[in-house]
Image (tube, rainbow, N blue to C red):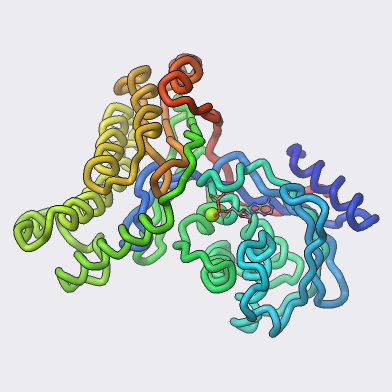
Length: 388
Ligand code: ADP
Ligand code: MG
């Protein structure tokens, strides 16, 4: 049984004075390619990772929910399933909004649920861009689905979660994070088409190590800059009378270059080229063509840096440190919506120690920041654990 599972059981007994009768788990995720794809209806290549949120659960006979999380110790959160859940949350920043959002989203679509007591333990770093929020929602949604025998598909659970996060937690996320957490496959990435939510499992070659490195940069500008990029993309799409930018070809963009100002042209160029690179990266990964993957990830990073302008010096530094070690025997790029967050690298096993060593010896002296290094593997999506 994974460590978070044992800790979730223990927290349950400490909090509620009795044993839980079920354990549910959902993973965080990392985007290998295709940041900012969802609002442009493009492709994203993403893996669930072996960092998990585990929820220990006991069914109640009423419609009350009581929840405790080891990330925010000391307070039991309580709410009732039903109409009142659709109200504006009293505290817009409360962690429990992600769960209340889920039940509110269920109630709004007429799905029934009995109450539950739950304890939550996670080893997904919170707020690092590894989607601890989706892991929380999907572990909870998987538990509710199972306990109430609703027979929702993983995609349907992801849709309920996304609606809840949009409408209740107030964060206008796409659905990719929830989909990956619900549908991830061990040793695979999923290539998701954000236009129709179709997905395809892509094998990650066995000789590759999956690194996630948190730059630990303070992200001040993220929200306004993120909104601005989304607006700029929408403006270019409207210029071409399209619903979303991913439906634009590079040829059409180049022919109309003079009709756009330089910033809008470069924003659009990033999205259009990244959409193509993401599909090519999936094919390169599936074929075990590491050289091609390496080139595509390098181009992706350069495009985020120069055209979409969402990287920062510490992130560029981290990418350079890793790229200098692995050359074309691995790929590396920023894996966040920008202005900090994590870098992702897929590198041949033989370089694993050298990558860790290079980051540890160079990153701090160049940036005065400590990196957090996670050596991961691609994990299955959410499930009930066999034993509680
Ligand atoms: P990310 O999803 O990239 O980790 P977010 O800001 O979207 O970052 O989500 C982090 C928030 O999600 C936390 O501040 C908290 O409100 C909630 N959250 C995530 N995991 C947990 C957890 N294990 N327990 C309680 N709240 C959590
Ligand atoms: Mg999140």
